[in-house]
Image (cartoon, rainbow, N blue to C red; front, side):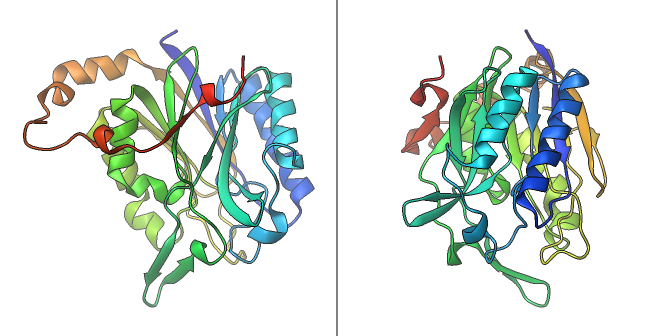
Length: 289
């Protein structure tokens, strides 16, 4: 099963959580009807993106209405759903968390954003996720009949070591729900995706919220899929919609044969990222079978 169809949902996110969930389910149904086997939602798909919103919209995972909706949608459509992210409440802590469901509707893993988005670009944007969120403490990968997939959330994509670990652990596809903004998006969004794909000779895909010029935080959009050669094979602009990519994993092997960097690494001179890995969360941590 070296070929499958991937869908990345770029949806507008409003104030109403029930409306956001209904829209997400509708897009999942649309993507499934178009033949997608793996469907990814954007970062903060149930909530406006902003530190003032996170406490109000936070839920437990599992058990909250957002994960219940995704579980039901995954089962009804017989697809894998990578649930973008939602604010997660666990005790007295909040996380930015992606929940992943298999075609049976079972929660198979979750990824808590490891690198919090704390930046300050003078005159442009200042954002401090750490004002309300706690960082995740593990990396996350899950297996499907097609390939093994690594998950990151938005700012995680900037950390090349994380992608290298996923690649060294056998991931062929890296999924990053994200919400780059109008400052970082034009400058870095595509460049970083292509860099992670080229560095590791893997497929890289991103799902962004659609752009809302009236929102407190304006997302760049431009959800994309990049192949191991660094070619953008699917993308969109700022509006709502679903982008699709037909993933052929034989392309990965073809690229690695032509430019065999994975075999040419000089680990006698530098340490592989995997040696420093402390924790990795895999789908077998959940009773998904």
